[in-house]
Image 1 (cartoon, rainbow, N blue to C red):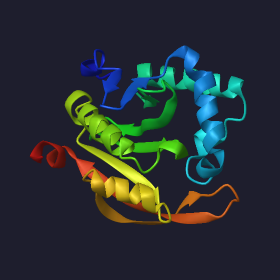
Image 2: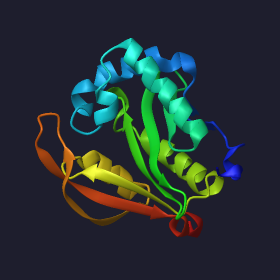
Image 3: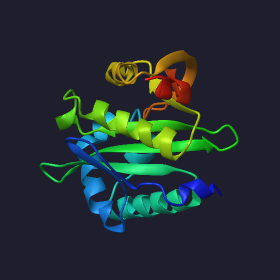
Image 4: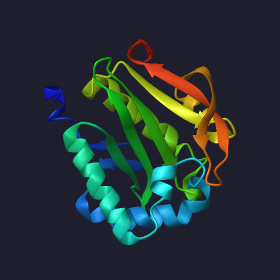
Amino acid sequence: MQKHLFDIESILITSRTVIRRFKEQDGEAFFKLIQDNRERLEDRFPNPAQIHSAEESAAFVHQKLSDWYAQSCYSFAVWDTDSANIIGYIELNNIYWDIPKAEGLLFIDREYEGQGIMTEVVLMVLSFIFEQMKLKKINLIIASDNYAAQRLARKCGFRREGDLRNELRKSGGELSDAMLFGFTDQDYFKV
């Protein structure tokens, strides 16, 4: 166990969002987010896209809470401050504490895309990653055809580190290529 993580923040605030660890009662709101974005998520985010009922969503939320306490995965729901609706999701998974590094996964509701909200969210989460979690690196694996996510990564200071062939499986079963982006604590503290 990483003792420095016992008292980390579970709520992060930007000018337009509240980014917080799931609460037990968030399953229904998260299910609505999945339903509203299912078509976009199926090829890029297999775990959330596999949620097909409010009960499955509640189980997903409970698992993510358990993962948080086990220090194996840190998941945040992103809430719009004006509407109080859940509008996005961020997950820090595949954590290797011996380095320490992790992989990130994120998406935003289609209605909120292109407004700079996710840029604010990612920059705030980078602060959490390097200042509180004390990680040395965060990676993003982005589908080669997901141009919006690639732009977001670059805008937030991630560097393209390579190409990954046949890295992702789409909902139809075919494999697709991806790009690996990385951001280190040296990049963060240099800014």
